[in-house]
Each structure stands twice: as C-alpha cells, then as structure tokens.
Length: 217
Image (cartoon, helix red, strand yellow):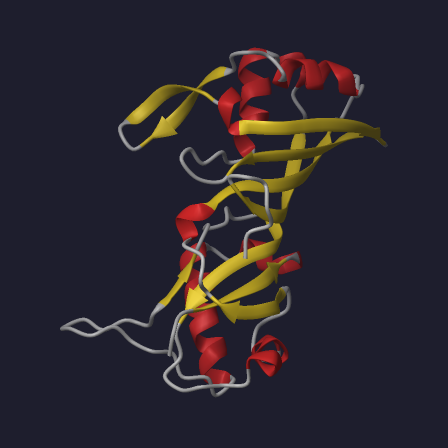
C-alpha cells in the first residue's frame, strides 16, 4: 500500500514512554488490532513505520504524526478507533489519511507550557521582553559536546499569561532545521535571567504547521 499518516495523542502517564519504547508499543498495537505492517526488504527487514518528530520524555502532545505502510487495504475511517483500542492508556489515534506531504515540509510547532514558581511569580511582560531580544545565545548540548547557539530565530511567536503561582506560555517554535526543544526556553532563562526562571516547567504540543503557517497534515 501507499504511505499512510496518522495523528495521535500522547498524554497522561504515557508521556513517560521513551521514543524507542513508543515505536515498539505502536508496532504491538498494530498487531493486536489485526493490522499487518509492511516490512522493508533486504537482510534486516524492519516495519515501515516512523514518527515525524520524536517527542521528549515528559512532554505531552495532541498532534503527533506517524507514517506507516500496511500490507493490505483497510477501512481508513475505522482505523483510529480500532488501533486506539489496542494501545495503552494515554495513546489515542485521532485521524489517518494518505501521507502525501513530505515530512521535511513540517516547519513550526505550536506549544503551550506551564512555568511554576515556588516564590513570587515574575510579571508576564518581563518574560515576553526577554524572549523578544534580538539575540538569545545559550550553551546547549550538541553531538560534539557543549556548544553555543542563538535560539531567537527559532521562536516565531511567544506570549505569557499570569496564573496561580505560575505563568502560562503559548508559543510557535521551529520544529526542524533548527529544532527547538521547549526545554531550551527554560535553559535560556536559567542561564541569562535566573531571576525569571521557573522552579518547574512542563510543555504540551498543540499543532503542526508548514513554513507558511498552514496546518501540516
């Protein structure tokens, strides 16, 4: 069959499933649902299944995308419920369609976050001013060790609202080339403005977009 793409949620306790374990979980889910994945050819065949943007452990998402191929034709409208019933709590398939667009066209991620403070919560406009700087160069881990990177170009939009002992974040950040892990937003505060840094933060992916901010499917 041609490539198919499904959208799924990873929430609740499922956020602690690692990427590799998630791949295994999805493959077992397909098998339990009676859906046979297509395999590659060669000496080491593997199922043709891939997640477009691997998710960090501990981060929730309602917009994960996965490409796959099946050996046989199936009823696509019925697939989300059928597969969801074979997956653990917190992983739910919400849609499936032919995977016509290339994954490289996925450019932006809409995220929300909760920044929690043990003491006084800083004003929301202070954080917005910080992230609107022309340059936000921080130290970050790279494949070659510790390096420096300006994360400002990877932030398209960002805003904050004050909550109870917290700030609520809403932002659009780069998903690929470069990839901006939302945790780097907290790292930037800790490195450059520690007085604004939260004691705890958690994030959630909301939506995916292409370079022109059209919803990516």
